Image (cartoon, rainbow over all chains, first blue to last red):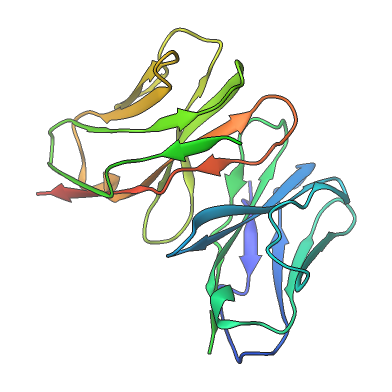
Length: 112
Length: 115
């Protein structure tokens, strides 16, 4: 079946602009995760959804970052007033049984 | 908080040879999961192998096996008969059984396969 998909694949934006990153999890997966991968910080957890609620938002780096999930499916990660340090690959993963997380191909965000 | 450490930023191996990637972790929990993920240049993280901490037997998946030493908090990955397609970044990851569902990753090891 279809895996986790993310769009766009690459995004270049100017400092100060807002961006939205989308994640389509595997159908039926109730858990969804966002991670950030950057050269300086490695792979960091951002937020976890169970259904439409987010019991763990502990990894969001600032209040410029927010995420939502609707219909227990698609999730959107929004970064407001982007800064150069936001440049990274944003990875989404989904899981059915809290055991194995399946990752998407990521969105590479470049802030100029 | 749990931490995961991979002390080898880069490793290389001749095709068909065996290579071992190291991983140590720190936790006060007694039950947890450990994973090795592979990330090729396509960026897609692929699960290679997983280990439940309560299991004493080391996990194996074809050419991939782990050496899980719970007391030493060590979780190394052995790749046998290395193939060109094994070239990638390899990440060790930890996940709690209870509570936080997030993966905690090590810094990664870049594996090069020499033909």
